[in-house]
Image (tube, rainbow, N blue to C red; front, top):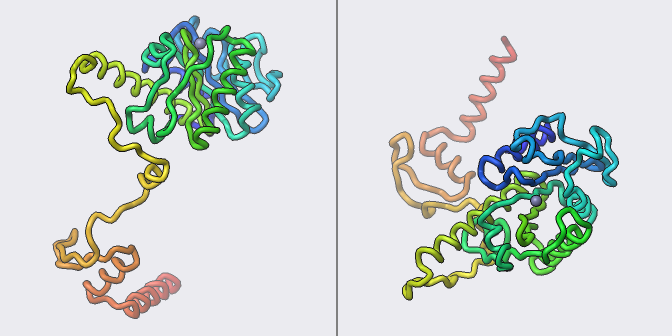
Length: 285
Ligand SMILES: [Zn+2]
């Protein structure tokens, strides 16, 4: 979703997406992207005055100390201090999102940690630690910014690969990531995770047959195998290929290529000869 070639456009698009998906509301929220020594940040009252239909020229660009390069410093979001504190504490972070997702905020309103009960939350955010909340803080205060940074440092100390996201009781959430897609992803999967927690409590909370325990505690090592390509057939399997020919499956890409050559009766020598003849003809023309 995020268009990294056009940072201001990406901020407007993600803001609208968050509003449409009920992750942001008219009462607030703010988003920023860091691009080397510049920070692109949404204007104040983007929800209250614009229902998150903001224009690209409303995005303010500053240096790392919030000194404006483009736009007026008075128009920068009131929560800006949290964004800049996060960027200064975590040089690898390139995007910060502050949202008001109602299902996550339900847990914040009870000071309850959020355990991971969805594949997305376990793999993308953390299989080891829950999402936690900072102490209640004055919105937009230095105290809130310091507590968010402390929470994120705690997350990394417990799980170096953990997604950076935390709740602010009775207010909302902050997420931070290497790009805006992930800052958005953390909020969306965490919100879905909270919907599942609430739904299962409503549906099964009093059912003695309900088993809320985790039967397989997925590890980081196991998560790292998810994206690996896997063989779907054993090597040596006789089968009919996509062209209806009987053939033998070989597991490596190279073996499969040679198998195809043997099957069609074309040797490597023949391929070289044909290639040579074709190239000669092209050059001749
Ligand atoms: Zn807020």
